[in-house]
Length: 371
Image 1 (cartoon, rainbow, N blue to C red):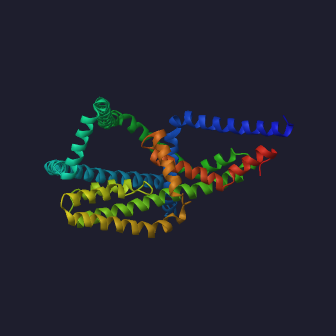
Image 2: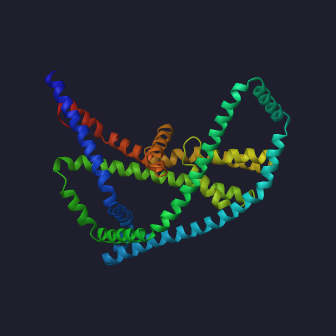
Image 3: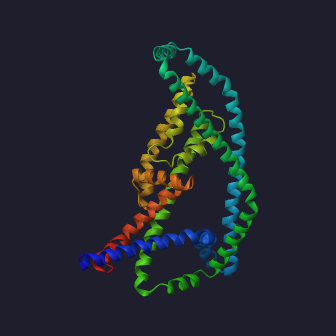
């Protein structure tokens, strides 16, 4: 093998091994240091308020304490109010489902007595009669499909209740973790400049500038993306809640919150909920609600088309198809948290690309020098 090619292969293997070692270190250390990372994030978010309070000639410890009370107390108050309202409306929503059971049964009975459906059933019976050999095979496939669906539903229900039980059993440890996060955020905030200077001094001089550039670009991209998504789903949730209240729909808050979360799915978004709901309303004779839901869907689409380019201007503006692939891959690898981790990973990788990390690695593999 040519010497130049051999050296390039060795440098490429070195880059792959270094990346694998870094990912392994993150995988091993993350469960141990994630409270510290959350504390740093909290201190980072509090820093502007701490600076304002210090500008009012408050002592550093008092400014940090007031900031902690404001952020944690405000978050707890909002979450308590949201959860309380959500639980109340979910109870009402379940009662509404019970009231509609008879209506759904009547709809299924009317569909089964429909002439077209009856013709299909007669065709199937005739097929069974003319092809007795297929009868057992079809029945077996239907039986397996039914068992698979029943098993999937059972797993979903069991998983939901297990999640609740695990959450309840984890409350003591969550309290301990929360205390660690709050105390760590307090100490990080009181010595913010000192800790940052110490962290900067640990970096070699040649790496200081590129690492700083990567961090600045990553901060802009990541926080810009998260802020943009939060603004968009908040606008969607407000529009849905107001629209459902105008249409006289019960549990508008719970439904609006659910629809706003579903809006994170690219391409499909709120149409996953509103379009089938409008179709069902039309089939049950509630024409006014069906038209209202279609109008509400159109309003949301127009609003997103107007707002999305402006809101995403501060972020990197991921391609919707890439975002959809990232969400699917994250869901397959990490479950429900992967719906957020997938796009965030794409944002991080794109920030590295914009900062020239991959170009520098390619230059190192080819020439042995970082550019």
